[in-house]
Amino acid sequence: MNQNTEIMERIKIEIDMERCSLEELSEEERNLVQRAIDATQNSYAKYSRFYVGAAVLLNNGEVFIGANQENAAFPSGLCAERTALFSAQANRPDQPVRMLAVAARNNTGLLSAPITPCGSCRQVILEIESRYGKPIEILLYGKEGVYKIKSVKDLLPLSFEDTDMEV
Image (cartoon, rainbow, N blue to C red):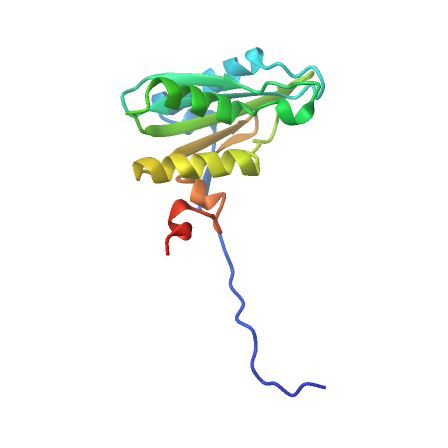
């Protein structure tokens, strides 16, 4: 038996976010959430029947929307968050992203609980935050409440960034 008295260090990681009602959001935030809800109608979700919409607010006030797009060759599809972000970046590469809203529904309607971005989407959001040096506020909508997150780093606390590759 090992008599080593050293104990590994335990590290606890916590995230900081708010849970609020739609009515507690600012008008700008409510409008962006509504654009994300509306964008669920643009989803092509023939296989999963899971419809996700996203809306991105740029620094200049422009909004770009996205919706998940599925394909019979499953890796060929793309999430709503990335379609919105890539559209915004392709059309306005000079404009930082200020805010991202996400909503989802299934065949019975909008989901009760908010959904969170997948790992690939989180990594893309992180890269955009890093690119502009500004956090992106994330609003995750559910009928029971909205999660307000100040930065994707709260969703991806042990993140891999470009600075990790520097020597």
